[in-house]
Length: 350
Ligand code: SAM
Ligand code: DTB
Ligand code: SF4
Image (cartoon, rainbow, N blue to C red; front, top):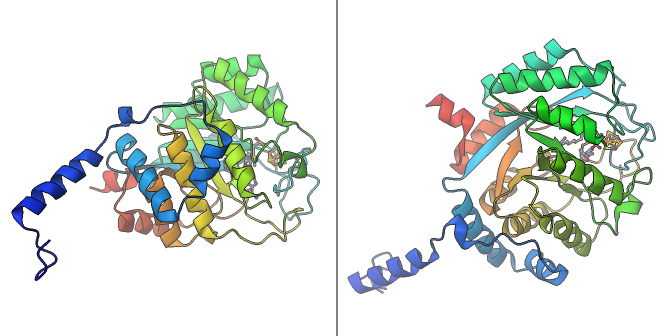
C-alpha cells in the first residue's frame, strides 16, 4: 500500500490483491449441497459475528445467484378468514378475535385479472392462499385448478397455499401445472406446541412429502418473532436444510402481530435478526430461493437491503399480503433500484 496515497496501490500490491480476490470467486458448484447439517454447526453460524456471517452468506449467494436477481411474487387471498385451525399468529383463524372479514372464495376471472395485473407490474410468480385446514374436494377445488391453469397460461409461476392435501389432490394440482405448493413448518419442532395445537408437526411433514411425491416444488419456511429462542431458529433451519432435496423456496417471515391474535402483544424483532436468519438459510441451502416474506414493513430499507445482500432473492410485491399490508409497489421499486439488484420490473423497464 502506498502510504502517501492510501487509495493507490503499487503494481505488485495490485497483482497480489487481484490474486487474493480471484481466489474468492467461486461457482455454485464449489458449495456442496448438504443434507446432514448438525444442530451445533447451524447454531454457530447464526451466532457468528455479523460481519463474518454476512461474508460467508455473500460468498455462497454471489456464486449461486450471479447478478443478484430478485424474483417478484404477488400474493392474493382467494378464500379469506374463518379457518378452523388455531395457529396463534394467524388473523384468519376462528380462534382469533380479529377484524378480518370471512369472505367466500373469489371468482376465477377476478383472480386471473389480479394475476394479469401483477404480471404487468413486473411479478413473475403469483401465489394464491386459502384459509383452510385442508383442501376440500368439489367446486371450490375445481375452481382452484382452473385458477392454476389460468396463471400458468399467463406465463407466470403459480403457487398455492391451502393447508393439508391428499395424494390425489396433489396429483391433480401437478397436472394443472402448479409450480409450487406453500406449506410452512412455521417454527422448530420444540416450539411448535406453543403456537398450534390443531395440527401436528408430523402432519405438516407428511403434507410436504405428498407435495414432493406429486412432483410439485416445495415452498416451506417459517416465522421468526413468535417468542422462540435462537436454538429454535437453528432447529427450524436444521429441519429445512436436512430435507433432501432442499425446499426450492424458503419463505422467512417476521411475525406481523395482528390485534386480536394470541401473539398480538409480542414486540417486533430487531431487524438484524431477520438478516441473520436469511444469511444462515442462504448458507445452508445455497440453491434455494430464500424469500423475504411477511414483516418487511417493520424492517426498514437498510435491513431489507442487508437481507438482499445476505441471500434473499425474492420479495412479495404488491401492497397486500393475505390480510395485512406490505410495502407499496413504488417504494419497493425504489428499494430494488437503490440496492442495484435485478428484478423483472427493472428488466422490463429498460
Ligand atoms: N391455511 C394455509 C396454511 O396454513 O398452510 C395457507 C395460508 S397461511 C396464512 C400461510 C402462511 O402464512 C402461514 O403458514 C404462516 O407462515 C404465514 N403467516 C400467517 N400469518 C402470519 C403473520 N401474522 N405473520 C407472519 N406470517 C404469517
Ligand atoms: C408465507 O410464508 N408468507 C406468505 C405466504 N407464505 C402465503 C403469507 C404471509 C401472511 C401474512 C399475514 C397476512 O397477511 O394475513
Ligand atoms: Fe391461518 Fe393457515 Fe393456520 Fe388457517 S391453517 S389458521 S389460514 S395459518
